[in-house]
Amino acid sequence: MVNNDLKKKFGDKIKRLRNNRGLSQEELAYKSGLHRTQITLIENGHRCPRLDTIYKLASALQVKPQRLLPDYK
Image (cartoon, rainbow, N blue to C red; front, side):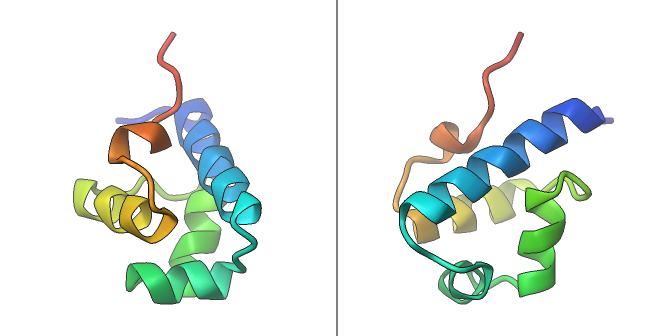
């Protein structure tokens, strides 16, 4: 099971990249093919995304999937 701190760090990274690109949650949802509610849950650390979701988000944010992963310590 993924711990809450790791989910929160992942969500923070998604939010930071989204904001840096000037995208709303709705725009990111559209570009990634996800629902806006799912974006909100991920950004707030309430949902642990599946691997395919990580790839969809990476594509929508135009980054490599590994860039979305928080540093592991």
